[in-house]
Image (cartoon, rainbow, N blue to C red):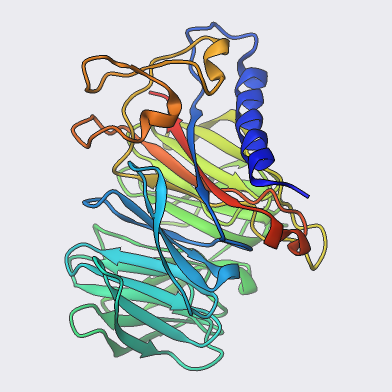
Length: 400
């Protein structure tokens, strides 16, 4: 049995050991690509946690506690959970839209997308996609003012965020849509269809579709991100565990690297040209984009155990998301500074720029904001342990 105290100690030790192990022989001035600076406990939250969304103005991270049938709201700078929406039905996708100050939540068990006020989290409306439709990922097109939802045995539907009504447009696919992304400088939707072992590319202007096959022997393609500036599509497969890079216009494979296993999401940092792949096996892979066709493995960094070992096991070890409201830059530190009590040097106010990592996220938003990741940890290996275990979010600082 893991007590909350032991859990937090374990998580801190895991990240510290990963940093030490990966960079033990490197110059002490060399900072690892990610560094944990704080953990935020989530008391009472049990089971699997799924997708995140961000309210940047209020400095909040909002995510679905699928196994808890709830949505959690965390004030990142205050470092605590401030609200919980209960009574949901296995929530998966979450989407906060500042333009309308609304939160949309996809409930996989009852086929509803519930809409909440972004300030008070009161229920505004319920959008029905049908029982058994398994609503999942949500994406927003700010130019067209439309929300896209992946659901069912193979469909992407459309929601009007002004009226909170389902629109008649439906794009049919060859299987349930997993990770998908909207092209911002064009009309296409790129969709991972794991059931069909392919990627389907939809033109949302005329509904035309093309299909790109996965590389031979690859399957279970779940996460996806885009690099539109370099015309690249990044996808992750679980079998085998690899990051594959495709040309955005032709679908041609230009690179492929091994990564942490059992990924469910991935994130691209356009400023640093890095791809972050969290894996349920208990590691985070970091890949450096040298140029559009060449990529370097920067290493795998320990997070927390939570691999899928039997039907009762927690299915997703953790998720990770890039925040626009990230913490200040942390100066490189010696090994001893990896301990929670050690000071951290930052380039942000207040004038006394030394503070312990536990205070890092209490900085005001006047700081420069280069990049923070939030990870929900799942150190539980069996669901029977979940009621006795506290969930925690860890905040990891990206090195410049």
